[in-house]
Structure formats: C-alpha cells, structure tokens
Image (cartoon, rainbow, N blue to C red):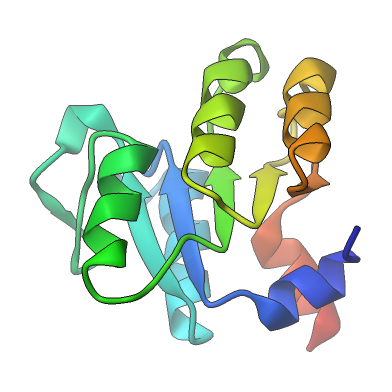
Length: 139
C-alpha cells in the first residue's frame, strides 16, 4: 500500500464525491485547492449532475465520471469522499468497479467495512484525513 505522500505525488485525477456548489462547504474549498495545485478534479454529485462546479462537468456517479474520462484516455486516481460514514459502502463498491487507485475518506468519515472492501480489491485507502491538509503539509 502506498503512503499518503506517494498517493498525492502519483495521482493526477481526483473524483470528488459529494462536491458542493457552495463555496463555504469543505468539499468546494478542498476541490479548489487541489485544482490550484495541478490536480484535475471530477465532480460527482447526483444533485448537480450536468451542471458545472469549478469549471468541470458534474457527474451523477463514479461510473459516469470514469466513462467520460476513459474517452480521453484518463482514469480516476483517487476517489475523495465527502459523504457520511454510513453512506461509504456503495461508494467503495463503485470505486472498485471503476478501477480507481485510491479510496480517500475525508476528516470525520470512517467506515471500516468500506475500507476493507476497497483494500481487498487492491485500492489504497486513506480514512479520516483531508487531502488539502496532507498536501499542504508536504509543501
């Protein structure tokens, strides 16, 4: 399993599950920060599907996002999750199904069953940590 710095260094495309249009929400701030540091963000939120957030088209689910990326030869490196802990198992299943490299659960998101499922399928797993905080700490 890769370390957090390795994941951040090797990843280019990050699906943000639960990305909000509200600039006051943590998901929006983290996604904007990641964009500013060279990552491609892929918004995933069925509420805003078809709209744009931070200049990127919003997808209803990870499969739609993965299909759109595949058309350009790209893939989802990290699935960064802003969802409730109890909602993580289906997200983990989707992350496995689309062949993502890492399932990342933000601060406060802890679901051991989802983590075990993803790790068992070969994904790197980060739980209860913020990508923005971890990236900033490496700078």
